[in-house]
Length: 392
Ligand code: SDX
Image (cartoon, rainbow, N blue to C red; front, top):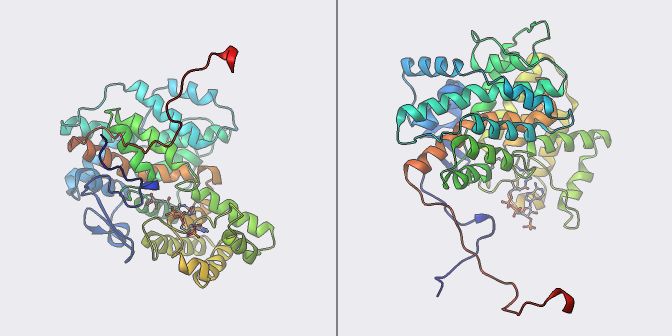
């Protein structure tokens, strides 16, 4: 006989694990990485330092931090055969599809599943994936832009090198812009982990079968792609551009979002956990204001976004359902100011979320969690006899 099985669609009230990595308080809008508040971390650390904190549990000493940066720099190349794979994609391929395929390809290039019990083995896998992902991202962008696939400059910082690898001219020319480097570093930090969200739960369940780290991350990338999750940052920009094309008629889109017969949702609003503001959205909105004013960009999309936020904050439907801007609502405005195309926004989210996926995968494996295999309540046909095709 079966035990009691309770169905919990979307696991809204199910805890999948115990974790010591990230703490969220949805009512108070609190987000902490290994006990450090997101505001302090975003203000004082750089992305790789945060990656180290999330994965290994402590802020690195200066020596550990410098070595981590150097070891990742030493891994910032990929097998030349990867270029042949990228060349095979049509220009129309979506970057998220390319990136999840390339991450799977890295699995093929690195078949030996990491020995998670060995700190040295785990460290090597961590620096390998953090070193190689930016190259895959830059080459994906350059493939779609018809630019040559080559490397950046290893004397630069991690984020500087991402921007240079993506945007340098064919003759190698690229002028760094500190405003953009700082903004991207902060954005990656804000996306770094978020407890048991859809893509992280995917990485955990795939990894629970003892699939390798690269394979588990490739699955996480696919889950992140969905417009209800990380794909929302692309959907937000497309929504704001549609509103702009529609004469800035935010009221029409608010009405659509509330119309139960209309599948349209206000992208970038609402959250499973945050029933008040999303602390990341506040930081990103401030960064968006700073980036646009420091670059002297008057982006009409920003004022449409702010208008929409103001309307939603006082709309009873949204207030009743505690729908506030989330991490995806303003991030696209900064990516756009950097010259990153809309279909690459979720790829930038994936670079940011890498440390979280790695940290959660490692925690799940070190705790020797059992393979994820939920049950169901069967509601299909009762037993019936087979009918040969001639008699059907
Ligand atoms: C991310 O989990 C994470 O931590 C994710 C993330 C991370 O860092 O990993 O924070 C990143 O994915 C942020 C969310 C990005 N997605 C979007 O912006 C897409 C739009 N948002 C919604 O689809 C929705 O709010 C979700 C998916 C974010 C949350 O969905 P839930 O918790 O399942 O809530 P629900 O769909 O049950 O909605 C509750 C009610 C419903 O109305 P009623 O049936 O009660 O009348 O609120 C309504 C929904 O129709 N609603 C919305 C809405 N979001 C919820 N109505 C209009 N517009 C919206 N955006």
